[in-house]
Length: 77
Image 1: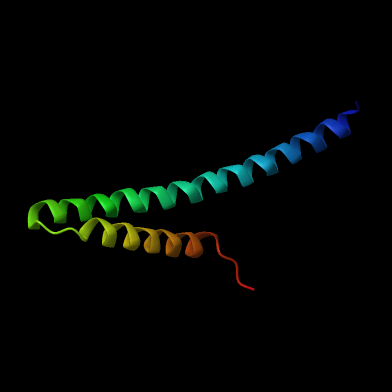
Image 2 (image 1 turned 45 degrees about the vertical axis):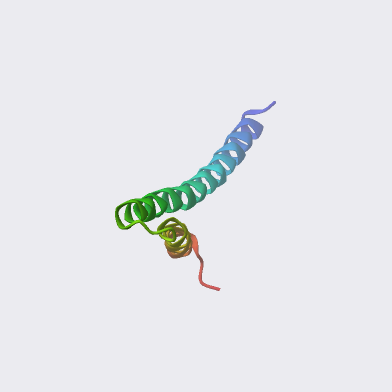
């Protein structure tokens, strides 16, 4: 292969890695929001003796995560 072809392959690999990295960040935002707020909900349930805190925490954590993803990665149309 020529040097020019090698450079083109390297650029494509860097772009693919960038997309992969963004995807992994998005998944980590979703998981972190659910785990953190679900854990807070579990703590509320534990101390108050209720049963809805985990579900509310999971839903709120998912909503906050989606909002953060849209804010960070969303594009103006």
